[in-house]
Length: 166
Image 1 (cartoon, rainbow, N blue to C red):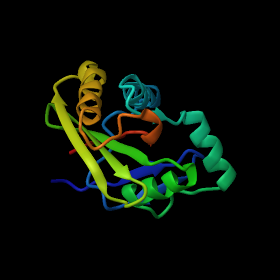
Image 2 (image 1 turned 180 degrees about the vertical axis):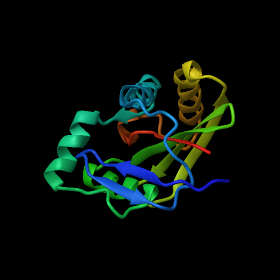
Image 3 (image 1 turned 60 degrees about the vertical axis):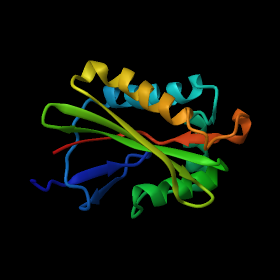
């Protein structure tokens, strides 16, 4: 395994070097990466199991709070952001490419306990299948009994997907 640096960019354009991740970006086109993150958000909304906080609202609140992602691990940041946003859950995840295979990995973190409530993943073999694969993972997560039947009890904010390759 070749260890490569990963650059995390927060919503305000600042970059943080994180040496803990042995990968580099697999999808370098910001439009595609944003599109996949939007597909994740839409997929959660379509389940009708969650009340999804709109991405523009997340940006606005984080900007008002002057929240910086620098120095946090992904789960720590998700919990901290979730507390600021006053949501019950945070969705975090990644798309990894290992060899010719893409893996979509999504985790739901409880803001209250900082624990991963549910995690699921699916694999596909082409970039064009990524949106459908995201949808499958979200539907699987939404089908778990860990969530209330009342979507207003399942408030969630979704962070952008990380993309990585070996």
